[in-house]
Amino acid sequence: MKRALAGTLGLLLILLLGYLFYVAEQIEKQSTIDEARPADVIVVLGAAEYRGKPSPVLRARLNHALLLYLKGLAPYIMTTGGAGGDPEFTEGEVGRAYLTEHGVRSEAIIADPEGATTAESLGAAAETMHRMGLHSCIVVSDGYHIYRVKRLLQAQDIQVYGSPRPASGSLSPRQLRWLYFRQALGFALWQAGINI
Image 1 (tube, rainbow, N blue to C red):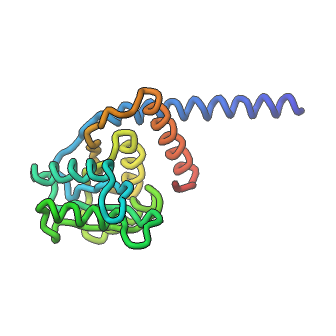
Image 2 (image 1 turned 180 degrees about the vertical axis):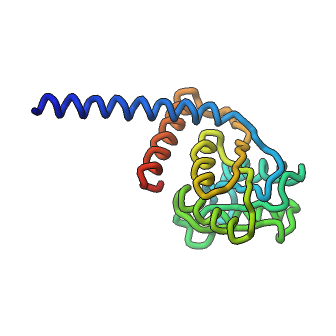
Image 3 (image 1 turned 120 degrees about the vertical axis):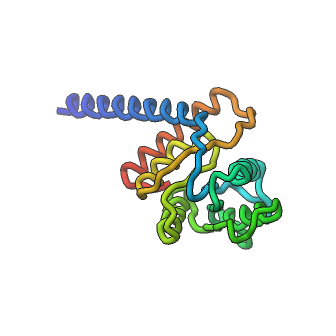
């Protein structure tokens, strides 16, 4: 009996790892594809901010979204992200301020400063999009993040095009593989109803 149970658990573990590695491979493929095309809004995923200033990662995402906006691919930019422990600022509000400083009209910026996790931020973004009658978006984040973000928004009946920010080249292949696997794990947990 114990041997059969151990064998079943071992098989389940092998299947789970196989699935995670398959999803990680899909994440890697998606990470370099720029699908930017006309849409209703550009959604910028939040990243760290430091006392009201965007971190280098958030700045790179915002700059990429700004470029897409200036190309005329969408009439709005939505900045997302909650406080992340900062008592004064949210990533979404810092993103709005940065874009305003760089010439984007305030009426064209939708700040959605809710959410402590990617899933929470995207849930709030989807709710705002539905309320405003926006049905499609270009999502801007780091390449390794795009696959999962697209699936979360697609589950909310939104047409999503991924546009990863230009890579900084500072990550080794080993670090990238770890990021792909971590995103695969996050995706699998989301499929199981656990939002991270």
